[in-house]
Amino acid sequence: MASLALSPPPAASAVALRRNPKQRSLVGIGKRSSSDLFVKEKALGRVSMSVAVNVSRFEGVTMAPPDPILGVSEAYKADTDNLKLNLGVGAYRTEELQPYVLNVVKKAENLMLEKGENKEYLPIEGLAAFNKVTAELMFGADNPVIQQGRVTTVQGLSGTGSLRLAAAFIQRYFPESKALISSPTWGNHKNIFNDARVPWSEYRYYDPRTVGLDFEGMIADIKAAPDGSFVLLHGCAHNPTGIDPTPEQWKKIADVIQEKNHIPFFDVAYQGFASGSLDEDAYSVRLFVERGLELLVAQSYSKNLGLYAERIGAINVVCSSPDASARVKSQLKRIARPMYSNPPVHGARIVANVVGDPTLFGEWKKEMEQMAGRIKNVRQRLYDSLSQKDTSGKDWSFILKQIGMFSFTGLNKAQSDSMTDKWHVYMTKDGRISLAGLSLSKCEYLADAIIDSFHNIS
Ligand code: PLA
Image 1 (cartoon, rainbow, N blue to C red):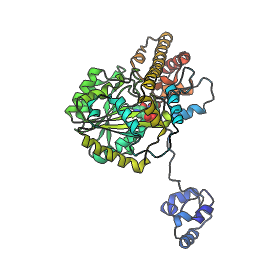
Image 2 (cartoon, helix red, strand yellow; image 1 turned 135 degrees about the vertical axis):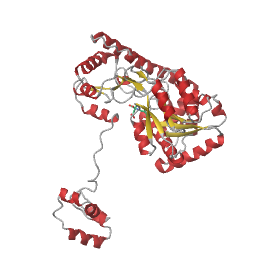
Image 3 (cartoon, rainbow, N blue to C red; image 1 turned 120 degrees about the vertical axis):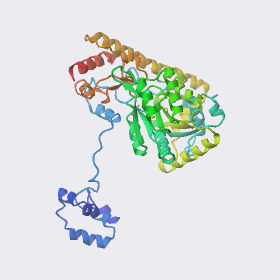
Image 4 (cartoon, rainbow, N blue to C red; image 1 turned 30 degrees about the vertical axis):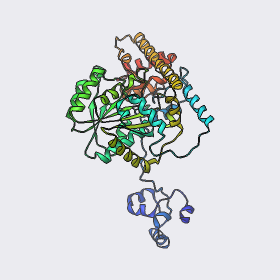
């Protein structure tokens, strides 16, 4: 190892070079002869770690493209124009376009400081008080599945980590099953299933002609999938389209899923952000539970409690018996342990303090209504500006029909590029804008940018 430390960087192993003669000629390692390498190999035994040449050992590592969502924030930061707007990531901003820490979160953190809690490891499944209130928030405290001990809840690294844990569980216990995801969906769903090696296919969801739900297509595709597939459903505020099924449509979706013996897998990343009400936004999940279905629900507190960086969420599995629920939990823990061992405590305590305390819970609901209300106001103002300014007669009313943080504008990639390149409006290339990052005062500017990009770029 000492020789490794002394080697001048960048360094590459002799082994890597021997295996890849092409690379050798490309980088021109001329100064050292292969016999030099050989002598060193013999003398040191572990050649691959000891011989330095002028090429990185990571030469074969290609540059990954920026993330389609989080990469937008990086590009935004690099832009020096005063007009710039970041409508990429779904992160709530105040009317002054500043990040927002909820008052109830500050209060909960003060309580935590006062209590002087320690930083011991949590159990693998997370903080018990957090798991309890989280399941209650999702299913309703008086839901029989909770009373009967049929829900297993494991604290996860926010929505993403919880989805990933569940995907690993599916891969391990249902290796023959595939996942069905909506077209389009949140881009990371595909990455999650790919990395967990769960095969997936898409079901129709968005109809660009009606700028609405392709309900017939959705039902047909769910019916056509092999029995026992995991059907990923956005519990509320579908990302990126902002289009949710109606209660009647949810019932029909549940019928087909039941008929086909599929397993519903809900992703609930925006509870409270669709309607402003936590209970209303849990409608779809609770309906499926009422049907007696076994199902999975990934939850996130990133948006509704503004705890983005605390990485706090959970995976819930509703089982048909308490016994199955206990076994599922044991296996989720077994998957979590070698991945990250146990989850972080800070966000879990905040949630337990807010959701578990009637006063703070009440205050949270009010704050969430305000956040959801601000987004609704911005949505209305954007629609008004577009309708007033666009003289072409185009109907922009689809914006008002969409719900949640996002608007799916229908702008194509070239038009979205123009929004960024010409107007400094940062958004994802599928035409999605985050209204949570928009203020009333910027609506007119955004409307000008959208009208110009829509009509002048094909
Ligand atoms: N599921 C959906 C549908 C989401 O939109 C997001 C976040 C998550 C899960 C996971 O969020 P979490 O891990 O922070 O709990 N989507 C964001 C951010 C807001 C992102 O892409 O990570 C988005 O802009 O789409």
